[in-house]
Image (cartoon, rainbow, N blue to C red; front, top):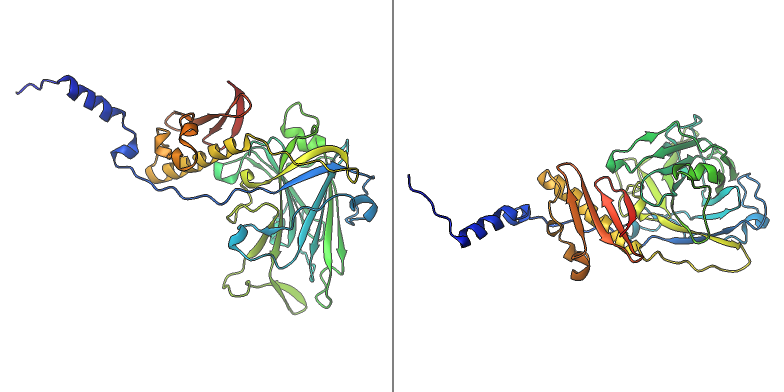
Length: 371
């Protein structure tokens, strides 16, 4: 048998081959661009007067409190502007947070009466809160025009295989619905329906151990959704029908913060609500963007790419280079990205602007640590 003699150049070439990332061995991938990232913002002021939860946006309670921007289609600019106007307001006091929404609606109807049923099978209004600001441990609330509610806790988004607790309750919550018209009466034309909701800080922050409430300047990731079904009157009742020009029956999803796809469970796209210690009507507080938000968004894009890589090749990318970060950020910043892998998990890190290092892992959890 002929014996092979390895020279130094041959050894170097062999070591280089062993160290190559999979995409250098023929695993090429073109990553899907993500929907534009431009979350709406809102400054939440202290309530100027006690709020009675009756579903009515009484002037003395709410007039000094600003509206959110109008809701848009969940897919953003890819879809037309909603047919009906929806806007919300937020305020707070020492006890908790107050939400109000006003929804134009010529035909107010609802059928579901069972608590914790799937409320969005009716027209509904929904609140989403991520008080930990890490896309995990978030809260959902839904209500229809009958005042039937569904509240639940999700340990993380559905894409990341969460625990979903349907029996979880917003302890101490109060809510009410007001219909400017008549409910379930197809014979007339209604004007709107509105909702008021109070949620105690103790319920909002029970997912953040040891935290009792917000501080001035704090951000809470928040979104609202309005589900609207197209209906027509048949035998004196509202019946769901396809949207004009479509074949299948489906709902409209009108939201405060669009996610770019028909999926509200993408907390990284939700809006930013900033807590202000000013009383509504006594002056304005400017919204202050978190300088680390761009860092977290870059990590989120790398998380998307890891998911796409794994779906294509059956394993997470073994190197930062395989995720093509140069397509997402300047070369100098790309050099600061680190990736740590096991066969079933990964962690990507990037220095922030405040002396911290930011992390994201395979289930989408985002957090900071000291350098």
